Amino acid sequence: MKKIATLAAAILAASLLNAQTKVKVGATPVPHAEMLSLIKDDLKEQGVDLQIIEMTDYVILNDALESGELDANFDQHIPYMESTNKEKGYHLVNAGGIHIEPIALYSKKFSKVSDLGKKAVVVIPNDPTNGGRALLLLQKAGLIELRKDAGITATPLDITKNPLKLKFKELDAASIPRVLSDVDAAVINGNYAIPAGLSATRDGLFVEGKDSPYVNIIAVKDGRQNEAGIKAIVKALQSDKIKKYISEKFKDGEVVAAF
Image (cartoon, rainbow, N blue to C red; front, side):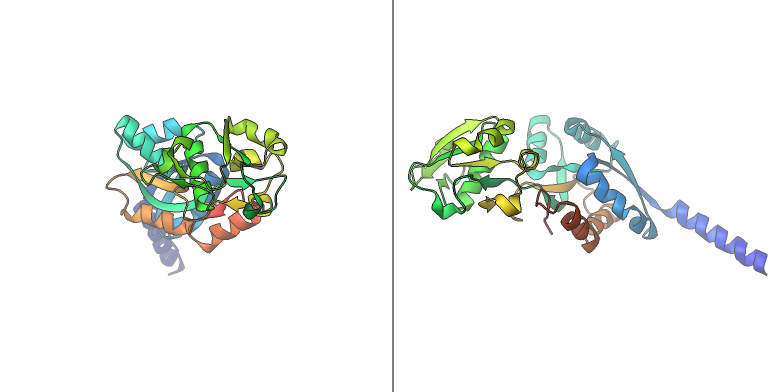
């Protein structure tokens, strides 16, 4: 009887393994692939065989998703995905927001936004994506107002109200931390702030919030966002386990949960 029971258990285990839904997800290494690795075993128990394909090229990740080589990817924020769709005629959609890698307004001279005075010099990135993102942050901070249709590609020319008559300088995003001491304030991307010893939560005068459109997402080809395997992955990523991972690993606020 024992042998029969053992054989039956083995057959059941094999049938469950064969019944698992395979989902290939392309991801950049940190933090995306690390997050996926944390939920891999949990998903296996739910019948989802998560296969993580690590890549570092955002372009290839979206090409592979559109072509069907990947079932999903986890590496980009919404504006980047929408830009790719527009540029290449792709059909990628957001299946769920997971985290933000925030930008913040920093200053070596002032400790809060209200300290900024008339004609203060504020540096923002000079590339369209990050420049627009910086201006949206400053609008959220109440320092400026932009044309309603300016959106994420806003430039200083789209500013309609500037009560402090702030002076804007546009520089390469990577070089901004080096000039922070020479200006009144600067908007700096998280990936450049951290190496410069800056923490968004500790040093930022104003930090991008959870309502940011720059949420890193699970992206899929349109029509697949409601598939059981995709929904299971999104749910697992929007869990307390991932929230704990983010809070413990990224204590300086370089990654913030968006759920």
